Length: 231
Image (cartoon, rainbow, N blue to C red; front, side, top):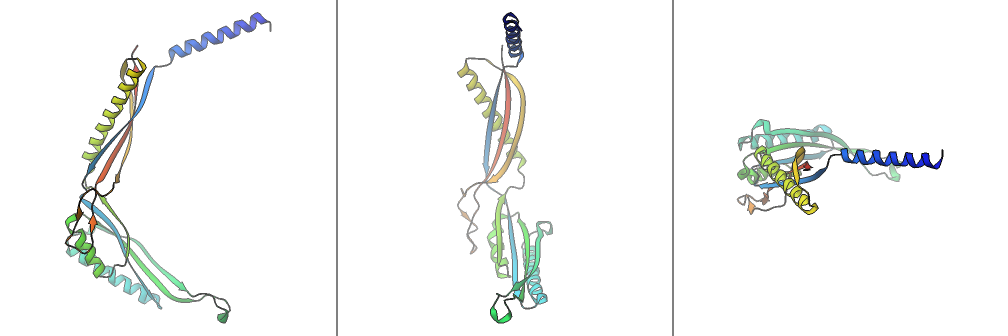
């Protein structure tokens, strides 16, 4: 291949690249975020009962009796059956430590029975009283308390609108900074979720012995938007 052929090939590639660049769409891609806070109107608590006994049957009976009392009590306090659900039930042996006197062999000395229940409380005013009641009836395991809203869709819609407005404002700013004219929207994609935020309300349920900070629930939405650059 002579020098003239090489130059011709290079020129052809350069022209093809320039033509391809001209055909590529001129776009601005941005991400917008929106967040809305609201007071929760529902709480989910995970509670349980654990008992130990030398006999497996007695350990399970003590645990079951306490859970039955708890479920009966909170039902009487207005919690619907659909808002109570068993999440975990276990029975495990308790092993002794290995010692030289018994040949360094561990042995079963008893059994531990546990029953974990998830409870949704839709009347937050009763949450403190419910916690007091379940402790009185034998609950000795608490694995979490989460606040929520029963109808999050209106909040999600508001957060989506805020996210789109944020994305449009960002795109307009970028177009102005770049000295170009912002064109129409080419595509929108969305992802979002809801998560509890820090306590922002006064301590609630003070009539009970269990102080509860209800806080706020933050609903967040995120959108990705692609805008054309006007010719």
